Image 1 (spheres, rainbow, N blue to C red):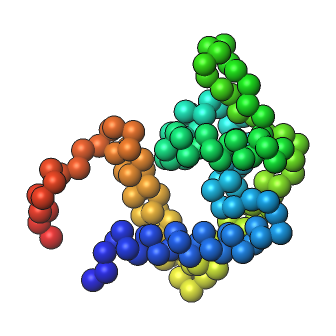
Image 2: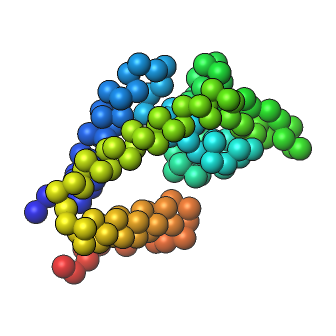
Length: 153
């Protein structure tokens, strides 16, 4: 049986290629698009909050945001604590979000098109649970078994 990580990573890489193809007439790459959607959904998030929300490294998010700011998609301004940069979408970002969401929706629909409605609901539910567990681990709420420990199958 293939590794779950290999399966998930393969689907993710294929999704990224699809998103990249669909974004090719823009100045965005798939990670930039994810940032734009998150910033539009959560205007005023700090860079750190955005990194946690996207489960990404803070320095990588800072690089994405620098690019997006240079291209006119976001603005960053100091918060009450001048060391904290808050991120806001520009009208350019808000204008492209429907296109990004359409790309995401089209991929999702294509990916599960051969599933029955029951399988689609089950797959979505199981993936949401797996995502929640993974996020809980990253945020410090869940422990993994010690390295080298085998779980019973």
